[in-house]
Length: 218
Image (cartoon, rainbow, N blue to C red):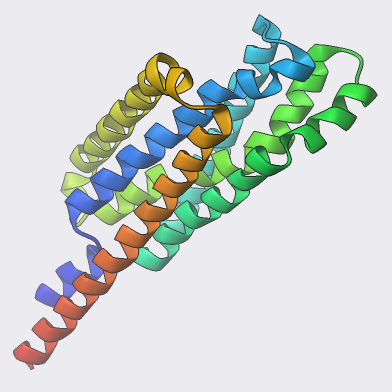
């Protein structure tokens, strides 16, 4: 029974909940900054916000689907950490190449509505999809017994949504007043990488503990 519990729970629940909070926070931080990033080329109208929100919603939906499928394949800390690292890496073009991405789109697409939609897809869809994969994968990491699946899913989505709310208020009320946009984005990237490191360390420690328990039991 001890071996089974270790295999079905590769990470401690507080770690999974904490990094889920970070992912929710970072998603909304990037989304709240989206209109400001695109404003020099496409303005800050309702249609621009509509483009950003649509892309984020669809990317998250795709991430939920992909993350759910991956969670059926022996969920582990390494794959879980890779979501955070990949999301951080694919967020770098937003910081480093935003102008290079938006300028040709602005020149090629006359209608700002469709230009902002295309720019949102190019810049935000991949990192947001990767961040969306975290939630269903987290649920699978938390669930040890089937009868607790609903409770664990509720806990995970509660923590993630609180993180999203904190990211929304923190970014719109404070960060944009204290820091420039790129510095905030660097902070989000750093937070994702730190979360990945915590996952790997916690997974290693849990694996080492499980190995010691198996040796002792033998």
